[in-house]
Structures are given as structure tokens and as C-alpha cells.
Image 1: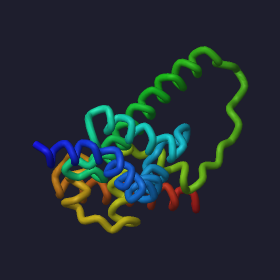
Image 2: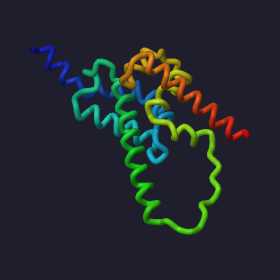
Image 3: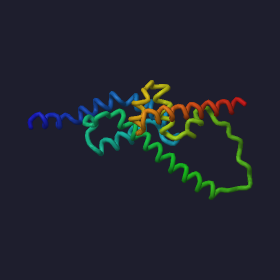
Image 4: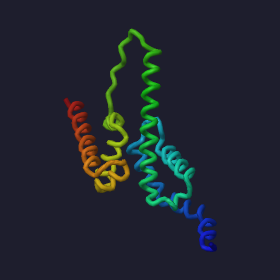
Length: 165
């Protein structure tokens, strides 16, 4: 019983140390998968808030995976909400004028993909995670993670080729 109290008493320090250790990798991941309207730091903070509502971070089996998955879910929700808002705005502001020409950047094509596909591409290509690790994080099988990453690469390649043509 005495050891349990000493661990509980140290929970804030353990969590603070864990956040310091994971913050930079989480920010890199958030920058790769995040929705343009959400700053990467804000996305990390929101994921940490969700995790801490459940309990101490150090008690999670794999805090990095949990927080990355939380960020994917938050981004998916933001993407859906944003899409609904844009469709409603388009209905309200229809005009006879043609829309100005838009020239997408290489990064803009990333946001056409779903957060799960973006996460798979980022983790496979930048962070060099295995597909088994990616599958656990994204909530799918290893084969599905490999397929998502391939689909994302193919979509980026097609967008770049269309841009070049």
C-alpha cells in the first residue's frame, strides 16, 4: 500500500517527464496529419487533454500510440465538421461569378487524403515505422496499413503528375 501511494504522489512528475519526452515527435506527427485549420501544437494539446481526462499518461500501455491515434481521430472529426461548414457556406453564398483559379501546393494535396491515409504515409516514409506498428496505431491490420500507405503514395504521385501536365 505504501508503494502505491508513493507512485500516485509522483504521477504529475511522471506525466510531465513523459510529455517532455514525447512532445517533439507528437508535434511532427501533428504537422503531417493535421487539418490546415488546426495548429500542430493545438492538436497535440487537445490529444493530451483527452488522454489526461482518462487518467495519468504513464499508466497507458503505449502513450505515443494512444496520443497519435487521438490526433488522427481529432483531425478526422475536424475534417468532417469543416466539410459540413464549407458546404453550408457554399449554399449561402452562391453567386454568378466564376471562382478564381486555384493552384494547389504540394502540401494541399495531402489534405485531400483522409487522416488515416496521411498518417500511414507519414509514419511509413518519414518516421520509418513498420506497417504492423502503423496498423496498431491507425486501428487496422498490417496489410490494411500497407494498402493505405500505397494508396496515399499513389494519390500524391498522380496529383504531382497532373500538376506537371
